[in-house]
Amino acid sequence: MSEKLWIFDTTLRDGEQVPGCQLNAQEKIVVAKALEDLGVDIIEAGFPISSPGDFNSVVEISKAVSNPIICALSRAVEKDIEVAAAALKYAKKGRIHTGIGVSPYHIQYKLRSTPEEIIERGVRAVKFAKRFVEDVEFYAEDAGRAELPFLAKIIEQAIKAGATVVNIPDTTGYCLPEQYGAIIRFLKENVSNIDKAIISTHCHNDLGMATANTISGIQNGARQAELTINGIGERAGNTSLEEVVMAIKCHQSIPVYTDIKTEKIYGTSRLISKLMNMPVQPNKAIVGRNAFAHSSGIHQDGVLKHRENYEIIDPKEVGVHESSIVLTARSGRAALKHHLDALGVELEGEALREVYEDFLNLADTKRDIGPKDLLSLVGKYIDESSFVELVNVSYQSNGEIKANVTLKIGDKTYESSSTGNGPVDAVLKAIEKVVKPHYVLEEFLIQAITAGSDDVAKVHMRLMQGDRPYYGFSSNSDIVLASAQAFVDALNKIPVKDKATIE
Ligand code: KIV
Ligand code: ZN
Image 1 (tube, rainbow, N blue to C red):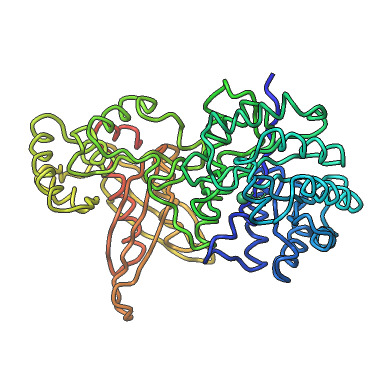
Image 2 (cartoon, helix red, strand yellow):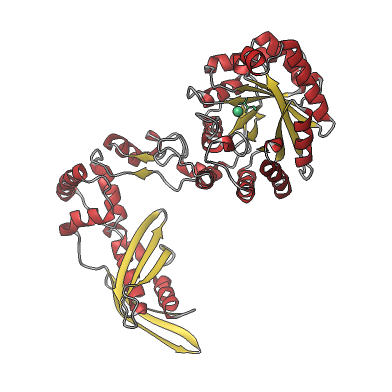
């Protein structure tokens, strides 16, 4: 039976320490609510002693958020802990996160102390924090470079003093996965009271190992993971939430589950990237622009035949609408055909082969090939005869607005009428009555071209059939006629083989 992994999000504390990424209190509340929606269990909301702004943010986040535990960071210093406790006053469930450096570097050069004194300070801090909250997490900073017997000793004492969670940070991102897992295993096997606390991972990414180390920690017994959205954080960043959550979802051999609503991952990632002014690298796992984009011919052909040939995650699972087939000079014929089909252009055999050659020549000179380029490449092959014809459009307004349309689809003629909020609405509804339920009108845009009273209206619309979009355009000084023509234009983009489904 798999056990729950507690997801501790530190985007607003460790993540927000990145230079240039600071958020104001309002923005932090927006992020905290998005994290709550995503389903994180604990939000580390800030380090209250560090500034009045951080204090205030912890207060406001505590008021705004109901489900996750709100955690405040402190050093092993009484004043820090008092201020953290004060900032958590409104938290429905509050946690104080306190701790001290435990590696020889930290003990000797940062804290100028001795191992005995470090244990005493750590224990005192946990006991002091317990006066304010039941839930106290102890961090052993730089545990990744600590001497294991000493680490085990301080963790045992911290649990004895009341720590409910013990955090084992690889603060400098030094460990290899095997090493980090071995530290967690060592604690499981050598700390007598370890079953009274949850072990937490907290990994930094200086060697690009943060996700691998976190997974290794979990495989060796950790049941909380400290993570940030997009992996943001000091230097090379923290462990990325989306990577750990999806690795767990993809591999049943990792014996835990999370309560993250994975379909909200992409939206949360975009929100944080935008608010923090921190672009996501295009090849970033799970949330990068190219994470579900296929550009080489072999891969495109494989994905189009069967998505799982080249994808281990269905993009919808993480909130990405669909995989993309990017047109480049390395694309194959299958990719070109896929794009042409979406534009309503059906080419096969020799015609497709000829267009493909022209396409390759163009792709060698132009980086982004869009729908306009494709339509100009295939101009000579498009079947200009319209399957759907707009025979007549009229409307009257006698108190209520009513439109009548006559459409010819193939050999059949259809008369339809509908009322609406206005003439455009009434005309579109009248056409929809004939073609529904096969197509859904999803996007509709009218633009004036010159802004004069004799202006021409340009209409753009998108019809959807399942996941496939069909675009229609028209311009006319009669806005009602332009709208009806654009609708019919989109219907005519539907490939010949599917046209039968219009009726
Ligand atoms: O990386 C680290 O050690 C930390 C602690 C303060 C938890 O962020
Ligand atoms: Zn950290």
